[in-house]
Length: 225
Image (cartoon, rainbow, N blue to C red):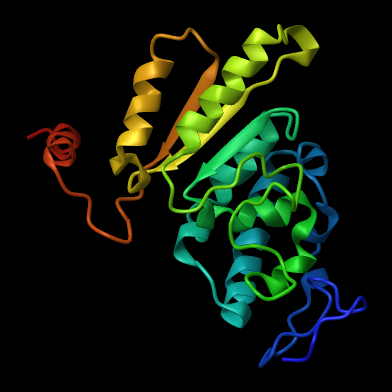
């Protein structure tokens, strides 16, 4: 791959071996450069956006590589969160971070997806230096609830109310929920009287199988056995 210069910005250059997919080919998606544009859509428009976003991810990842299924699984969730909440004032913390391709695409990085996870391109995970919409750097970390709780408590201590009130959301996967840090944060959140929303993206999938007594107990609860 050639060296990256000023004219070869993330998302603007070619991908080695690429067939040259065109990000501008998506009629509705190409009009969404930030969540404010998304919030102007009606229900039918949101459904169409989800279809175009899913197709774009399929085409994009087929050229660049990356995490496919986890991001296809968060298309509607991502659209819903950015539609309901006033991001970036309201904050979303993603955990695990590799499910954020839809989030990146809807927050002004659609064209940059052609260089995701490449030298000089955008990160495959949330990165604060990359966008104001990436509120916390996460990977396979199980840190979302702790980070979001700190943000929510900070907003509370600052007295942010009314139009200035800041909502904070933690999106955590069932695999990430196996770490003790997540449960410590939930334990604290339950007694702090803080406005925090925790969304469990339970897709029954993780890189390594969930193990331990707590996993078995929760599995029995969900199965009714």
